[in-house]
Length: 233
Image (cartoon, rainbow, N blue to C red; front, side, top):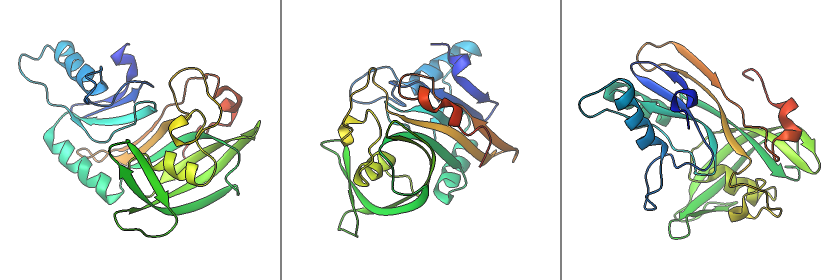
């Protein structure tokens, strides 16, 4: 993997990468390779740093999900970015191919979600429940092909497995997401979920940043490539 090629934006404070499908965002109990450690070693080698390299992960993407992910190269930027995340000042958009059709061309879903840590799976409920947190998203249908829909999704909250669990609850699970009830198996280990868009103000320079990447045109995505949004909506 060419980490320079996977780097979409870099300056003294930030590094935004296109995380490959199947690669962990950061280390876990498996000990498998992860993007955080790979980038940290790459920066140390690239810039010939004699000591430790500072790098902070600002948010995660699930292992089978690809797309834009933010790292900070300074503690000042990390602190500000974490605050921006909490304030909803970082606009993230996702592309999804789901089974079926969500019921209307666009809509807002609000549910309640809880995480089962032992199963590493989230459960969604229609009404408030003890231990469950509010979760909300907006979706727009971009295309429908062969009883599958291409959606653009904007999160109002950022819960674990939120998009996957909410879509499954609404009877349109993400294609290839067997954990959440997808019916047709696909080749490879990817889900049809991709973090394609980031818009936010640089935490130090205050420059507006607008970044886009798109999924590789594998079997799941190929029928929908002509419908990908090519500008901010």
